[in-house]
Image (tube, rainbow, N blue to C red; front, side, top):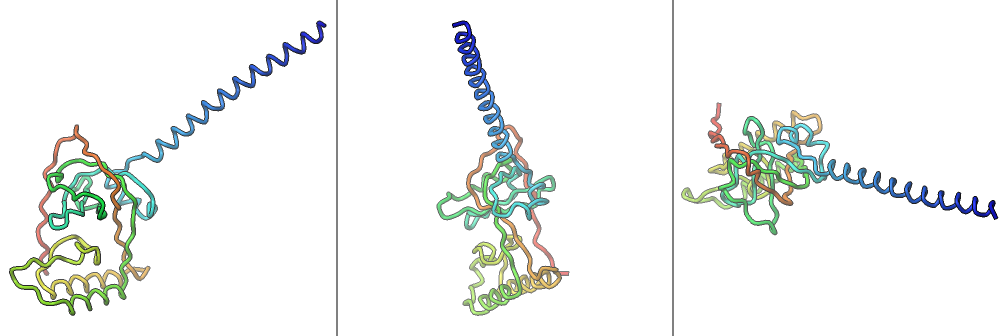
Length: 215
């Protein structure tokens, strides 16, 4: 009888120990999951994004920067800047996303999106030049947007006033393609998912970029 009682106590102790071990294991798992969540929610500055972008293609990231420019025509493009307030990160909004408000310029934002790469090679440039040449002439009073605004020819998001200017910019881009080892030039952007304004940061006055002059 004493033997049976003793064995029963051992089995009972083992059961308690097993339950405690399982509880500890669950706690460890939860801690591990929280660490993974922290990694996923890591926020990059605009400068960090620019430096690491080639390793982030097709990944979901959150970028923090100052809204230095909002496209007034389409309202679908936003540029985030870092310390130097340059257009370091291009954010593109899809058809289902409301237009960006111009009033956002100067605000510090955290924008979540998927990193996209667009490659431009000589064949693409030839196609764009052909489109420009075949396009009907615009009247002088009409504004002509650079192909950038149509998601057809990435660039610095400035406007051009004539076919000649468009072709000149494309030829400048061709020179960069020829100078590259890869045979193409990559343009990176953030496909918009969501964003929030960092309210406790003072609004900044974005720098006004002067139009480029021909040397």
